[in-house]
Length: 235
Image (cartoon, rainbow, N blue to C red):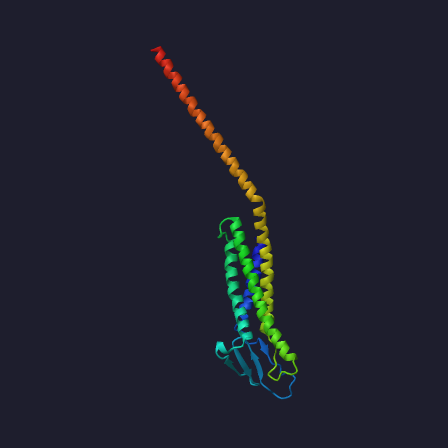
């Protein structure tokens, strides 16, 4: 039970970190610290492009229509949002199936629900990891490309936070899935035999009990018959 609680806390922390990256502005940022002249800093995320001047004021512009966005940006958005949604449902399933909540019903039913939550957590972590890795790969490839003439960016803080949250989701889901899966395997291996044996024993007891009851009725009927005959003979 304590291992399940620890895994749930780990996955919940990772999910919160992944959620925090969606509204964060600094997915990628331009570095102007080595420049002699004061030039504005550029940074962007999944939803908008921003520019900040030396005075600290910033101006952001949302991306154009979704249909006009490149496929790379749409894929990153879809994976990041999927990670958040799957992490939410993973938390719901885990809360239902945990031993300390006692909501799911029997022990094996709780184990199966917990295993489903662990799988959902792992898929959520891999979705977030794919989104951040795709964004980082594009940013690094543009930065290293000498023929690229556009604005070059570096990795922002949101990517590192997202990577940490995705790792927590994956690790917590793996351990949680191992624990619940082991419990399901033990149940399928040992409990059905004991269940069949108990059913056979109960059936035998019912048969014996029925036979004893029937014999008892016959003996009582015989006794009554004997008593009746004896009384008639006496009369």
